Length: 333
Image 1 (cartoon, rainbow, N blue to C red):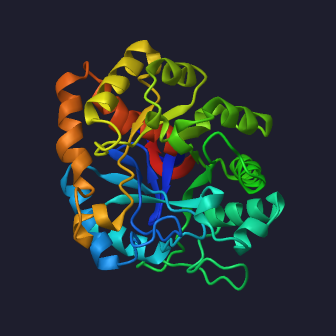
Image 2: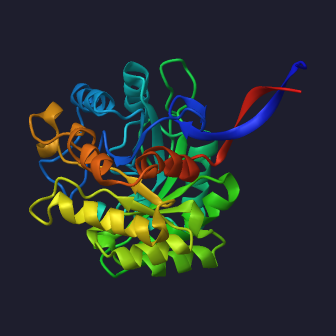
């Protein structure tokens, strides 16, 4: 055995620093601890103690990591997320980028920026750190409990239902530019699972490979044939619609996931909850809470999935999507 040397290993960028992919653990690919949007009056997530309670319930339901998917200008609070990560032991990934236009009031400063200005902000948030408060100018950096800056590990864009506004197109272009500079993974909000191939084509034209992209809410269009086609070109499939019995029973999503895996998409499926409402968080007095995914849906998947699929969906696939940074580790020579 020789002396140890330093080697670069794949890592995920979390709010408390880069964490090696090996041992990152089970991942909920899409949740929100803080969010304030004009589309969701009365459902604001803005209480750190309540959000910490939800994070604890997520951890206790079997998850070791989560993506906090709130991007610029919709109530994100990076220092509070870092404190929650430190207190709960969860590996939490913060998000840069922007949501679909409907989440911003008319005339919001973010929607007035061109693609170049947006890209510059997004790159800085991944490489240098997130601002304490989102603003056009004079941004104070956010710091974690140990004093390090809180950096984003994900880039986000969003579109409307079969429609991409001028702002949303600029965000997609900016996210593509930021990805090419930083290597950060990308999440795209698809309204009702629409326009998946169209979004991938736009990103590809700007140099982004499909295997850097997770298509959030693709299960809102529970079409396993479509999902298998998207997986075949390399895109990750964001399943995050459980506990929405008003729209569909969990069985629809379970069957869709299993059939997509049978059709060859098993290496691209991601699982999350995207509960994202004060009225649905137990910490805020609602239900079913972030523990629903781990306590209610995952056991059903475990009982019906072929060998290896559950580990692939919860550990292997999210590691492949998120683990696009490099961390230094010792290795024998």
